[in-house]
Amino acid sequence: MIVILKQNAGQTQVQQLIKDFEAQDLTIHFSQGANTTILGLVGDTAHLDMEKILTNDIVRDVRRISEPYKAASRSFHPQDTIVEVSGVKIGEGTFTVIAGPCSVESQQQMETVAASVKASGAAFLRGGAFKPRTSPYSFQGLEDEGIRLLLAAKKATGLPIVTEIMSETQLDEFADVDVIQVGARNMQNFRLLKELGHCDKPILLKRGLANTIEELLMSAEYILAGGNEKVILCERGIRTFETCIRNNLDISAIPVLKKQSHLPVIVDPSHAAGNTWLIEPLARAALAAGADGLMIEVHNNPKAALCDGAQSLDLPQFAAIMDDIKKRVAFEGKQLQ
Image (cartoon, rainbow, N blue to C red):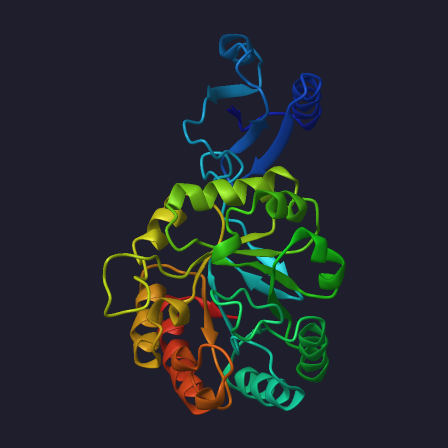
């Protein structure tokens, strides 16, 4: 349920109304825009009398939200959420690029890639320390050593780091990670999502291989309901009957998510494409459709990569794509972070 307040509502009256709702075991999300102030009520609102609420002098309107997700809904929070990490903004009016290898392999690799992607214009360094793989015999990542190497690359370049968590038991190991990624396979790991809701770190939530947009937003709701409002959505392609490509990048998901939710949306064209030649056109499409950023896999020697080399750009390829992105971002009137 949302309660829309009148423009002349006094601060004292607003605070009293919030206290009245909180006394009924409701959690209040306060959203103040240029023309509208909204109180989002989270909890059991079935017993609330809408007519009685409307008798309050400062209340202009009361509405029940039809979507099953509340905190993630744009009805609940009309203004776009901007997630800020180490001075870098992800959200409306900006365009942010996250780049780096699928998996962390060595110190030399991370130093080389980090320095190069930063020079090309990336704002974040990505790299998998823990790797969820379909086969138990595939490379599983360097684990704790991988995080150490990411942090060393961060120290050398100043780039904030993004890496994937596998379990809620690992939160202590991710204490120095700037953005925690929840991968497609863990999108509905509800125990993990609940724990991430209690931490004060930005969460990059990837859409599952066969999940609907509503299911993605419901997973975001688990994190938001726990009190963590720093959620970034990521479209990375979904599985369909098509076999010519690894996954189908759902470009339509970008405007739909932007309409239904206030959360920033980035796109991972690497996992959708599965092939380097597709990354540039998919990146262009994502920007044109309104995405707030990209996450691109980059490796210093893709042919020797221990994981997903076929979809990893080499350093010159990434630099060329970034040159193109910079021109298009400027044309769109956005600011490259």
